[in-house]
Each structure stands twice: as C-alpha cells, then as structure tokens.
Length: 163
Image 1: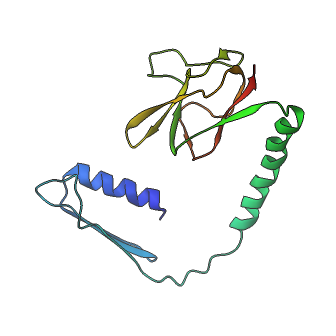
Image 2: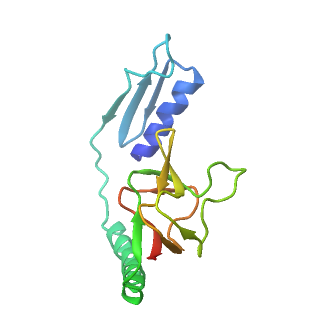
C-alpha cells in the first residue's frame, strides 16, 4: 500500500465518524483510531509494517528506465532549438492552475506578451492559492504543464522569449 493510499484512508476514516478501523493484509497491518472529541484530529494513528516474505522481482526498474529515456531528448530539444528562451519554474510543490477559479478565463495563453508582475498561474499548496507572478517581460512561447496537474519545486512551467 502506497503512502498516498494510507493518507486517503486516514482522511476517509476521520470524515466517516468511525472511532477505530483496523486493516490487515499479508504485508502490513494498519490501525487508525480517532478521538471522539475531534474526528479530524488523529493523534492515535498507527501504521505498523509486518515483515513480508514476498520477493519482489526487478521488473519495475526497466519500466522506469524505458519511460525516462524518451523524456530526455524531448526536454533537451527545446533548449537546443531556442537558447534565448527563459524557463519560469514553480517556486513550490502544489497543484498548478491556469485560471483563478473554474468559471474565469485563463491568466495567459501561448503568444501572450507579459510584463514584470503579471500573474501567470496559481499553485495551490495546502489549501492556499499562491499567485505566481512574472519576474520579467516577454512573450509566452510554451506552457509546459497541464491545468490541475501536480507540480514539484523548481519544475519548469513556462518558456518565455524575453523582450
């Protein structure tokens, strides 16, 4: 079970109102206890791993290598073609949004001219929506991230041709 699945299970149990849930498989055992006072605060959550006798085969590693190989040429190609482009990167981990809200228009499109201080996108981190502003003027050449996608710290978001 992945850590994301465990976190989702903890949230689900907290919201369900259950006071205790136990989940046990051959590989692990999880007990989630919530306090009766505040079901959203969970100081008693315990995750315990049980040693497993399952032998993992190294079949996952070649799949990762195969998926990484095509990406390297595609990320190097734009840099070689246009050395004058500047990459605007994400200053934080979160979810990338091109619009201020679902019913509004996008902040920018490819081909738009931007100036210093223009809002380019929003990155949501821990329920806080952080406006990402341009630190330079130029023309948007490419948007590198899809709307509502997770982004990492320092991940390229936009390619800009400086003016």
